[in-house]
Image (cartoon, rainbow, N blue to C red; front, side, top):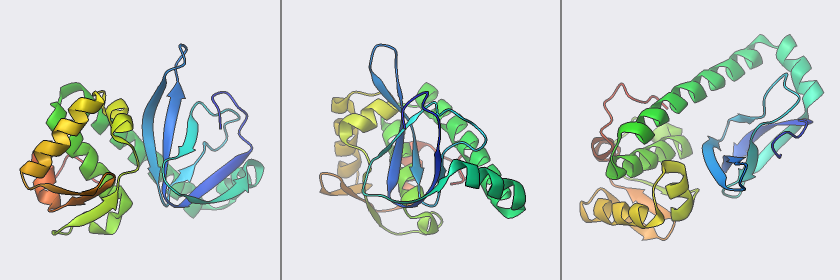
Length: 196
């Protein structure tokens, strides 16, 4: 859905990853967030959408007419509570990304991104040790866009993480994190920093 378009549907992401983007006045696109299953996509009670939502991977969604969803939210406190929790989680993540983008080194940014994706793609694994393998939802260029880095810098940081033994690059977009704790250390995340 494009910037300024009237919202007619509301969607529940059942699988896959959706990237949220904003088109700048000069035509450049900025990735401003990622949505993972089982997130809801859309803004209740709002007629216009300020962001574009685009599938970053193969996705499965269940869409509802916006008018129906607005009625369900009013009549179902558990649904309203879930949407409220998602909004607060997204606010917390946005604040964490402000710190990451404003204060962290390139190495810490890339490690933070990998940790973020690993915890969202497989949220049940976020507190376990051991390897975690997943497909990156973004290309190296898109990761650079998301983190404010060049594609060359992103590629260099992937190489450094691989040489340090923190990750294995299975193929271009398939990554194996050998230890979430090790990635947390590379990202300079303490145990209170992010709770995905």
